[in-house]
Figure (cartoon, helix red, strand yellow):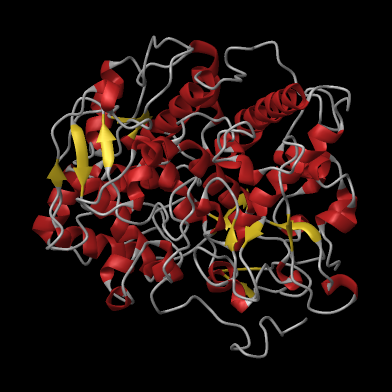
Length: 562
């Protein structure tokens, strides 16, 4: 195993930085690259106005601006699926958050790659450009428009397309291919510089370079950055299969359409059934939605329900492992979560290198089971496969102290409750007065959805998840009768062998359905679409996507070997 991970002028193998994030270089075509979705957020909620302040400290009150006229509202609009809920105290949220990172951690049955595919999808679905400004700071309409769209259309990869002046930086001169990145050479052989195994980056000299991608959050940790690089490859491979004689604009349009439709098919048939009870997915995609934007014009732009963005789809936080069998250079759990943050540019500093060093390229065989598409030749070395943690109310301990760069933290935040990801999720839900799990049960029953409400004992005891014994009797009573939706959804999954059901499953399935329906290219509206790029007719899983993107070559899927 190669242990040299940084230049001789920097520490050998740094973990997440404990100091402040450097001032990001301004990107005129998008939000500053040093900010992520964990930073201070505003939520423009239809019919209510804009919520500001995170509720993470006593000095950060919630401010609700007056409702904004629809014509002047930000391009990205949030909405409520359910009613307003009760705001829980900072004390309750703090105790529950600590319990969630102190609980036992169990492996689930889902390959670990789906954890970070989920994060990539989250960034494709949810974005609020106002996360990049402080309260009272001026923001131009152009910056507001960077909010993109709450649809599953890969705009986190494509931006506004090659014809847009601001997004042109993402594309090669032909305005059809996306730019790729090159890793930093650490030696000869397998550690040589490799083209296409990092996201494209901009900058000069030997300083760590920021990602030249449409959504800087996809360089928040190495695992999601490697997924982004794989999707760039996916697009470029599709382009290469189209006739060169086509005009550039038409060639790009066809490539994007094909990429988006295959992406949606993979999410519906492969990703969603792994995290949500398949019966719910079948019901939603065959009988339609009953709770979210029911009867909406299929061609209209969807909104993004805060119940999904702030609660249900934060399920992936519980899937994160403390460490990974990453590749031949970092096997046997030596690819720690801290290092995955460090070897990115938003969450870390690329280990001090200008681009990703070649010893950190992902071995996809360790993250996805290619044997599930009858490719046992792509199995990893024995004992070197990563399973995601079970979806439940427990979280990996490193998430109790996030790298400051991932949420715009200050040096004094390190080690404090505001750096705890579980607390940030619970506090943000309180800030928005998000509906409780019990309120969502009542809403769904009223809409004709058959949902079984969790009992007080089930919510209290779970199934080897977070233990709520630190709450006083009065606090526990409050929490169990007004259970934060995020915790409720995770407890449902915990009691269902790690797969969302009930309230959580319905929120996720209906939001995905609407996001696909409202996309420019849509498998919901184009129900005659069938995938063409997989190795088996009518099948396209994430492993099929990777095999296609990496040219069906083991030396590209696992370039560092065994």
